[in-house]
Image 1: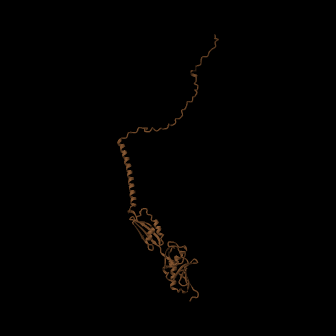
Image 2 (image 1 turned 120 degrees about the horizontal axis):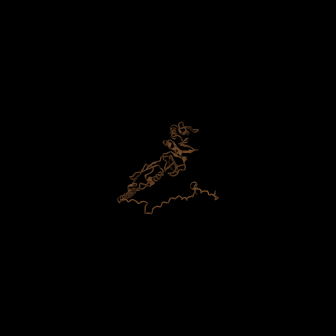
Amino acid sequence: MPSDKPTQDPPEDHSEDQSESPKPQVDLPVEPPKSPQPQVDPPEGQSERPQPQVDPRIQARRTGVRTRRRLRVWISIGVITVLAAAAYGVTQSPLMDVDEIEVIGAGRTSSAQVLEAADVELGTPLLGLNLSGPRRSIAALPWVDQVRSSRTWGGKVTFDITEREAVAQIPVGEEWALVDREGRVLQVNPVRGALPVVQFTPVPQPGGWLHGLALPLLVVSEALIPVQQRDIGAISLMDGEVVVDLLGEGRAHWGAQDDPHGKADALARVLAEVDMSCVEIVDLSIPELPALTPIDDCS
């Protein structure tokens, strides 16, 4: 007979059908990156690694090498110092000073004037002697055109002078000033010389310069030097033109400044071949064909 007791299901076997439920994930703490540790120098007197012991003989050899190097440096410095002192001493000794001063080429200018202008004393050390100043002082002398200087280690200083040449004389009161072709006043003489006469003012003291307007007159005067004794009078400017006075009433009109020597030769031929007593003007504008203008009513 069936029992009235409720039947019970047998217990479930969870051994095989039981599945593992997922376990909750737990975040593990992450260690922060390690920062590099600063390197600390070992205390003074200590080294990271033990230094190997140096053989005393090697250490002594190294010390000797360094000592010899320092010694050679000091010896070199001493030698250079001695040589420099010796060289300076030689330059200041009588072996390297001015023993003689020579003047060459001075004619119108005396040697005494040159030496006074140069102002170089005997016994002056040659090394460091600047001769540009003496050259400028000598060149300021009226007759001096160019100055060259030289020196020798034997103690000789030489000044080589090139002098100017006078091409005209200009009346200055009762005296006569000699002038070169560049307008330099060279000298003032009490009497008239043989050079052509130029009329021009003002005239500065010797060593000074005439105004530039006088230069054409000086060019003509230089060209007339070979013929100036043939009835040649004064040379002057008339209305801006160079005029040469001739003895009597005549005069020569020079014209342009070209071919001064050709015009001087043409004037010399006219003076030698023509009776100038009835000639008023000799036009030298064309030296190959000088034109003559006669004096009116001249027989």
